[in-house]
Every structure is written in structure tokens, then in C-alpha cells.
Amino acid sequence: MDVGKPFLTYYDDTTGERTELSYATFGNWVAKTANMLRDGLGVGPGDVVGLDLPDHWLTVAIAFAAWRTGARVERGAAEDGVTFAAEERLPSSGREVVGVVLAALRTPLSRPYPGVTDYGDEVAAYPDSFDGGADLPDGPADPARRLVTGDVLDAALAAYRGGGSIVFGTITDAARVAETERARR
Image (cartoon, rainbow, N blue to C red; front, top):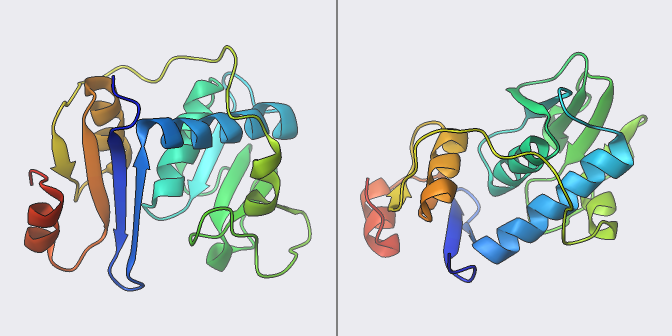
């Protein structure tokens, strides 16, 4: 696999954001987050990681990191596990809550929240490689570059398994983005 190849491209037409991560860069985010989950938050095989986050490139990285630790991923708040919640959704429930700013890379929370770990502030301290770990969930492989309008996590897993890539996000003109990104719809 060409690690310099784009893996995911995230659009937010409401803010003008376009973020593209290669396989290598995505892997660094997954490793840092998996280390944070395992070493910083004590997450291990069978634990639950809740994603109280919209579809965003960080959501995909956090889900992959959770799977690498052997944890199960649930959408929404995990009542008995670690929950990653968008800052605008804080406070969120869970045994442990990690606040996430869905903006520029490593952006800290705008203010402290009691009992909430700041993802943007904490994740940078963790290594760019993750030793050991569990395999990603099994499923289909997709080698294409696709514009995703459905479940981004399933599409990301299929693309990763097949060496493909995904384009997703808050997109108002899907035809334009598909053409610009040379992505199948």
C-alpha cells in the first residue's frame, strides 16, 4: 500500500474546511489515539468507546483507534465506557468523557469542563506508533475512491481494507465534489 496516498478527505461546506489525510498521517492519528485510549484512559479489549460525534475525520480516526485497542465502538454516549463527545455536546455521559473540538488539528477545548479530558490537548503527547493491538473488524474491501453519503465508518473500513479512499462530510454539492475529487458516487 502506498502510505502517501490519500485515505480520507473531509469537507465541511459550512466552514470551508477541506482536510485530506494520507494513509501515513491517518495512521499517526490512529496510533496516538490508541495509545491515549490504552495508556491514558485504560481502555482494553471488550471495553466500549462511545462516539458522541458527527461524521468527521477525527471520528473515523478515533473509531479505528478504539478497534485497535480491541474495544467495541458505539455511536452516541457510552454509559459504561469512554465517550468522545464534540465540545458542543458537552457535558456527555459515560464513565470517562473526552471532549473533542471538530476543527483544526489538535485544537483544545475552548474552556475547561469539570471531569472532561481534552482530546486536543492530550493526544499530542502520545507516540506515533502503536505496538500490538487488535485487528480491525472484518468485512468487504473497496479499492475505489468513493464519495460517501451513508455510514462513514463502514465505508472507511472497506476503503482501508481495499487500499481505497473516501470523501465525506457536510457537502452541499455532491456532484461538484465528486468531480473535483475524482470520486465515485
